[in-house]
Amino acid sequence: MEFNKYLQEIRKYKVPDKDIYFINREREIEKVTEIVNKSCTNIIIIYGPWGCGKTEFARALTYAADKINDDVYVMYLNPLEEKRIEFGIKISKIDTWQYLKFRFEKDISELLKTFNIPELIFSITKTIAYSISLLVEKWKLRNKNLILIIDEVKQIIERIWFQPNALITALYNGRGIREELNLRNLTYIIMSSDQVIVQELFREIGKCEIYMMWHLHYNAFKELCKQLNLNEIELIWKLTNGCPREIIQIQEKGVKKWIIEKIEHIKNTIRKIINETGIEFNELINEFRKILENEGSYVSKIEKYLIQDNIIIISRHPEFIISKIDNIQEFQNKLWICQIPIYKYIIETIVKTRNVSIKPEEVLESI
Ligand SMILES: Nc1ncnc2c1ncn2[C@@H]1O[C@H](COP(=O)(O)OP(=O)(O)O)[C@@H](O)[C@H]1O
Ligand SMILES: [Mg+2]
View (cartoon, helix red, strand yellow):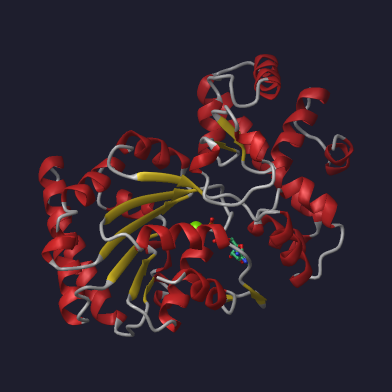
């Protein structure tokens, strides 16, 4: 896999629904290239904040592999896109996705019949091995490199009713099929925005590599703003830290309406915390204060709700972050970090005013 070719080709990918070209992600391409160029089996987990660009990166990579005439084959699966199947399954260099869809669904329904976990792991291992062997035979992939991307892995895990780590164990147990099928490289890339699932997957760290993907770095962010004709870029940077999905929403709704929605999001989480834990409002404010004062090091009883609702994200040592980031020191020695800075500003404003019904102007003042 040639880094430069992929870097060039990936820039030609157009983001669907938006009339913009795919931006940046050099570091991520570099990492994938490095992994694929070893002849071995890899199980890679990529997690990251909601909307940071995981799915788009996977699609862009599949697109590039499709255009480049080399021996890298990417198969992209996204169970959330079953209505728009052309987005849900894509295999580079191969256009017969119908066949695969049929194959995959049949195999998964076989799996549903088993509920015993060890047996399930065995049959998942078998099913995956079988599906890959069909691919390899049908499209003559011997001596080639195969990247299998499973996006929104939570969907698969929930549908077949098993524990997240069982999937990793199944892939791990079946890693020998690479040699059996004479594949040069076999790389599984599992993607998830769901922090609860990711926490479970952390337990399987010996069997896989876990990386965090981050938002766009400052220069890439500027490029996106330019393509979207956005002004006020310094403010948008402070609010989003380069999260492409949030930037697109700001373009569509305007800053004010966007902040109102973010306040609503935090209010819903607060409601949930109060209902489920019975915590008093004053105590909740104190808890938020402690969280803000000791960002990333204070373990709070309300933390799990902030994780569930994609407000904070479990942090990792900087060496496990694949993306280029400008504020690397912010990740040092932190257990978690806010997914986007606006959440921090909103919580600060709530603590300061001891009121949850705050206005976007108040939040903007605190920046
Ligand atoms: N590298 C990029 N260049 C341009 N737009 C991007 C890029 N990455 C993401 N986007 C935009 O941001 C949106 C959210 O990204 P997505 O990949 O769906 O996030 P995630 O899967 O991490 O939740 C995409 O629909 C796309 O419009
Ligand atoms: Mg996604």
